[in-house]
Length: 249
Image 1: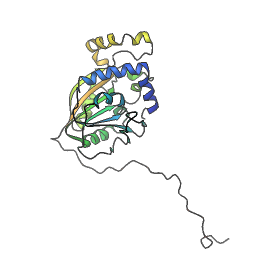
Image 2: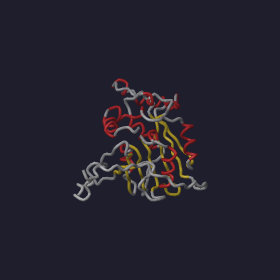
Image 3: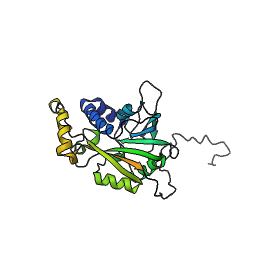
């Protein structure tokens, strides 16, 4: 079950959410410095991080899963948001250069199908960055943040999933070493926790961040997939039967 868009937006507007945003953004900057003239798609709720990349990109889209809900982005501009099914993205084959997944993979109904769909839409040499809760970290055990919902991953599980779906794992990073406390006294020590955590307990980070590249030298099996969408009519009137159509008494 996806996190709700209202809860996600409220979290990132809270003091704890802004600190989490800053910590993850610093880790992302170590993997992606600039994306000049590239096409970027954020899948899930990647809006807080897309702002930092879209200055250099050719175009940037925010794809938000139907189960989560969507908000308009960027605010005050023409919308670049789309409500999507993560296994049926409204994009042609090989049409984007980069994909950033945040609050996405841990909520996917079928992670392998989602990854195969991302493989389809990425251009040759395209790159993907996944941000997921670390199953060993404290954040995955606290339900008052979005990182405490969904399915957390270990680094080994994430690497295995990428290889199974024809991606080559590359550089990685960690973030959220400070405890997810709402106390200001604890939040003030965020910087110290982040520095010490990277050195002393990197395996216990709140999130794992992995970059991967689309692999081309191994084919994917092609199989027709039936859409799981169910269309239910809101109203289907049949009209009033005529005199001839009425059954005899």
